[in-house]
Image 1: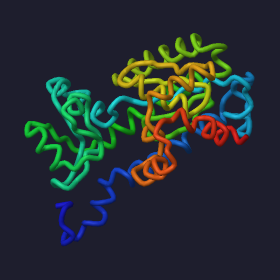
Image 2: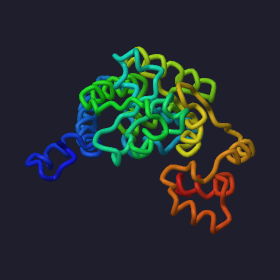
Image 3: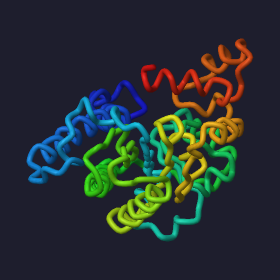
Amino acid sequence: MLTSSENPNFISDYFSASRLHHLSVWKNRFQEKLMNQLSVLDSKSDAESLNEDQIFSHYRDRLIAHVDMDAFFASVSTLDKPDLQNKPVVISHGGAKAACASANYAARTLGIQNGMRLGHALAICPSLVVLPYDFEAYERISFAFFGVLRSFTSQIEVLSCDEAILDLSLLAENVDDARYVAFKIREQVKVSTRCTCSVGIGINKILARMALKRAKPNGVFASPKNQLKIEKWLTEFSVEDLPNVGYKTFAKFENLGIKSIAVSYTHLRAHETGR
């Protein structure tokens, strides 16, 4: 059993089932494959010939898309289990202290969240369906997902096996164009993976990330472009909504009297652009 350190195969079994270890290995393998694909491209268009220093850097009016699969592990693990599609499901391994790696939206409506202890989740919903990891399926769907993204642009920043940032600046002249591209991306992802994804659009990565929160699940949302409208819109978000802001960082913001993203947006944007 994986739960016992007395098992002589404990270490190898642990790392073979470890989500973090697998994703680290997968990401390295995927990025290597992606770079190999990029290196053999025949296209010499402007969109394809940008070097790394130019990507995500030189557009005056950028249009950034943050694309994220919806409840990825849970969605993939239930693809061939139609009887579970509308039931609360989490992906986990181990005992009650193990974390829920992915909760589907039926589970989330009950208050079950990614990262929650499995024992706590089962206390909330005793009928919760717990499925093991299926890394082979995750990898297959991940490659299909990024294959779709690559068919639109090579300007991809890989964030995870199910999440990426795209620069649509050479594909779209305005927000409406970017929305159209986003809808086409979602259509192709659904066809290729049978799973849904959401897309947030903004003039920088921070705004695209915030827009993604409004797009979830299975939707597209574009943040405003006008500076005043952006600041008004950002009052809807707490600083906690920013990426990598945990309890300790949020406490520091609170000590500074900053609770809304809008208060610090100018500083965040300046930091992102290097100005």
